[in-house]
Amino acid sequence: MAGILVALLMLILGTNDALAGSKISALQIKGSDTMVNLGQAWAERYMEEHPDAFIAVTGGGSGTGMASLISGTCDIAMSSRNIKQKEIDQANAKGRSPVEVKVALDGIAVVVHPKNAVGKLTLDQLADIFSGRIANWKQVGGADAKIVILSREVNSGTHVYFKEHVLRKNDPGLKTEFAPDALMLSSSQAIADEVAGNPSAIGYYGMGYISPRQKVIAVAKDEKSEYIEPTIDNVVKNLYPISRPLYFYFNNECQGLAKEFIDFALSPEGQAIVKETDFVPIK
Image: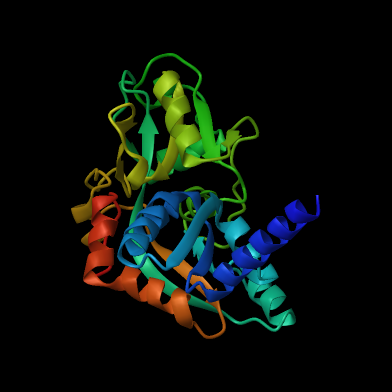
């Protein structure tokens, strides 16, 4: 028994010595579900080129990322919206000063089932649909069927952006909300899956989730404007009406692995990954 205990002790000490001598550094990144695939693609490529680094990327929504950054449980928050003043105040109260870095651009795609006859909508029509003022597809040229509204949950930066820029039309005086019967789903993938299986559904997500299983709606600013689809070229040229920046946030000064990783994301190689994952490079 004594021999076994000695062996176990030597194993533990040896493991600790190995960890102590390791050069591995770790980075925790949390936040926007829109950005999670992009963040993971960046992390995988970076770790391939830097075997001594470990980078964990998880979603949960922009609000979750901000809360983690404020509490100090992540190093970088991914966000598809700007940080709110109350979040800045909460961070400052803990001695932290969030810094914003724009890392990519995105268009929010509005999608329906492939069999839906509707293929284009104006921003006003979208606002009326998602707020519940338009409740039947026949009101916008589709079949006589009740519209099933799908939205991201309130913690999502995509939810916030869509509400402020589509439902409320960038007007701070408007207090329009999503329809009471809108289904709030936990992820962009959940919306994609539901739309693919429900001919009456309409939803939205970052254009990185576009697939043949959904039909993309062309969107116009008004009835007199051209209907534009969410493509990289249309977002770069600022033609698509529902476009936005994507951000990294970090606390105080960015140093070590966090700085190296952000520099990588902004490098030509990192921005090429942006395009490979169907987002829009900023450079």
